[in-house]
Length: 210
Image (cartoon, rainbow, N blue to C red; front, side, top):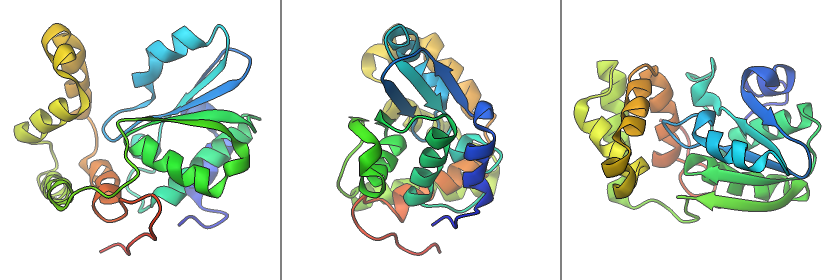
């Protein structure tokens, strides 16, 4: 868990412009992406909602220069608190996809007074299955060892993150993300995947890092 002066969390407070897309005025909606994604996954929602709402989409640690730090879901919640504090947004709806949704549940636990609501996209409030946890562990360890994402990992990610309709009708979008994934430092994927493997349940104490 982050200490009060944790450099990674303070980055969100002191340099929010480097990690955020902030558009519109009105009631605020904050978007937090999932593993392997970044804030641009919400570009369409930002465009659609920014005429009536303040829309804030931001990059979680794995997409920043702090990707190699060890952290848990509470740390990510503290990052979100630091960011919204820096932006002067003290009341908002928090919309989280997958990892962003797991973080949103921790944020709701730690900072309930700041929330007008929580939207969960492809996120759960229960443990992953043992098989799912093992899959994350194996992929993360192999990516860390190889320094690259194997083709089978890319195929798994494509089928987890995109529905059948998108895979069939919008393959260009899928390939754009695949190309982006291949540029990511694998250590960032390793650290992010640890949250699925070791600290996977939003309402149970975190397990210690191995």
